[in-house]
Amino acid sequence: MPIKIPATLPAFDVLSREGVSVMDEDAAARQDIRPLRIALLNLMPKKIQTENQFARLIGATPLQIDLNLIRMSDHKTRNTAAEHMESFYRPFSEVKDEKFDGLIITGAPIEHLEFEDVDYWNELTEVMNWTQTNVHSTMGVCWGGMAMINHFHGVKKHMLDDKAFGCFRHKNLDPTSPYLQGFSDDCVIPTSRWTEMHQSEIDASDGLKTLLGSDEVGPCVVQDPKHRGVYIFSHFEYDSGTLKQEYDRDVEAGTPINVPTNYYPNDDPAQVPTNRWRSHAHLFYGNWLNSIYQTTPFEMDEIGA
Image (cartoon, rainbow, N blue to C red; front, side):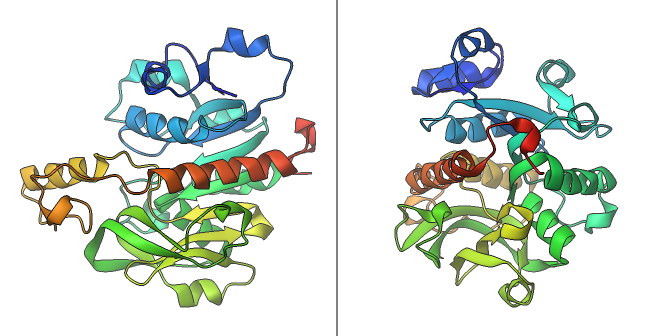
């Protein structure tokens, strides 16, 4: 089944060219099926790039997906055209009375700030509390996952001396988890952050279970059954060239940055990077969607009840 997105959204043409099955609202309305309603709370500055990345992954399963784009109500983006935001995004204040099968809260390049110093933190805490009554399953990605695990469990993020930047091997710590169905014993995941979570603090919090972890960059995927949450502190959704774009940006700006680890062939930035995470990325998000499909109520009103 395809992902349902507006025909005028840039991701529609991008995914169509890549062979991903997409359909517009008119075509979806002719199918006698309840699609999974998935919302994307997009906190990243490059909105369109992030839309494409997540739509690519959640649109590649046999399930019909109704993707809804959400933004913080009062925070103004500086990197995406106002026309795009007005055309395709709704503020959280307009959707808070609706229910969703799934929600993805993206990362944000604000990890140097304390959570409480983020200008939209109060509304984000409202969103996280709202997920407990209006969303069946929530995925927090990188800073979004750190915000959720901090809000619900008080687990702190810790600044790193050097940026965790590159492609790092992660061990499969729970092969029986439905989120890791089909996973190898280890996998490579792109990572780009100045903060980390400590496994000892996660272990000390009741009810959390680490599914993927790395000896180099720590815990990566944590399941929170009580809050119907999954937190991933790295970036399965990244395109092949995303780390290159970040590296080139910092080099051009004169910002000190290491060559991303295990990314370029022979660690040579002149070489074309090799994507070694794409298959596990599709597995991970496909497994998440399948777990939602298997457990979400058919009647939307029963979500969160």
